[in-house]
Image (cartoon, rainbow, N blue to C red):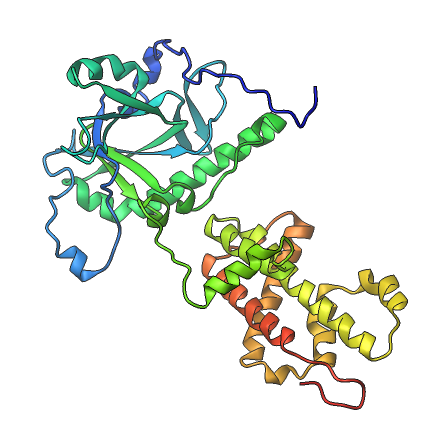
Length: 398
């Protein structure tokens, strides 16, 4: 049978997984104890905009009282892929460093209601599959529409306090960041354990990879908090218009229209957005080194160096040499506005790149802002170099 031939077959995707949740697991997550009503199009956001703060909003969990002086918050999110079962179990708890994560492979979003035109059709229950029978009875005769959640992960925080919302304000960002870090560690560990079986896993280390965080307090009212609004919005928030339309059309006209440096800087932005700092820095360096080498070989060829000599020696020329020596020999760097700052940021990226390549990873904390600034610096240097027109020896380059 040819590998190029497609042979269709129907596949039943809903599994028969009616095995009961183990009793000891029921105590590990409040999301197993209730079905929480939510609306897909209503999220809690984080903003310092004074106009938004003045909008009327009911306090979160205003009627939820502490139990023996403490509140139990449970953060949860959905992974875009299935984690494997552990010992053939759909629900399990894993220690991740000092933390404890609950993992469930049978949670669902069960949509209910009559839908349009009576309502927007976006109300759902966040619940375990074992709770569907009760929900069907509650929503009879209309019924419910369960959509599987691939992997549901949650983590609890127990805090002393008198009211829930002030605690959330003070602690949420730290909790969220710790939670995401723990998930990333969990996925990395499964990848290292499972090898090729875990090839679909891709850990994210920023909120961009987990645009919705559910949070409940004392197993009561649940809210969904929006992290990356662009990822959860019901319409695109970006627009390509004006002078960018012809650029897009030119890229689409040919498969090789996008240059190496353009593709690398695009990847650098995406990697940075999702928390892959090392990969982002590598792409910044690829973009800069590619253009530096291209212009340097163009320059020395004009100076009389033969094509064979360039071919035989090009692999011996390093990024460091191109950036710190050859750049200054072929152009007047002072013509690049803010050259000292720009080259400093690119050299910073080169140093970080060396740590990734030679030490196996970044050796110091790197922020998304630092990487964004390095990307902007790379764009400035590349634009400057591509506009340089070399002249034969004896004439001045423009």
